[in-house]
Image (cartoon, rainbow, N blue to C red):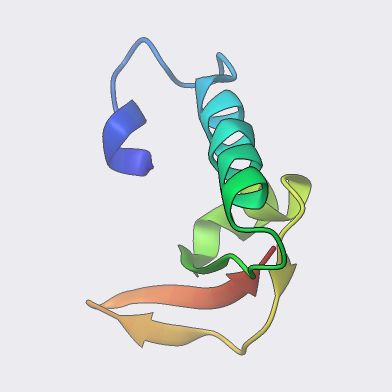
Amino acid sequence: MRACLNYPTSPRHGKGKELLEYILKVIKENFPNTKVEIDAQAHAVGYYEKGGFKITSEPFIEAGIDHIKMEY
């Protein structure tokens, strides 16, 4: 998702939140009872928590970057 919205005009305009909400809505409509699991970069955990995700792991390193597994 970050790669889609990594433009100078998009930060703090709610487009990422809109996209996340839409993606989760489509998943739940088409795949009810399916867990959505992500490997969130540690600095973005608060963003995903606001979107309803819960932390499900301790921090780990992936590609040299701290990540945390999360589930919706």
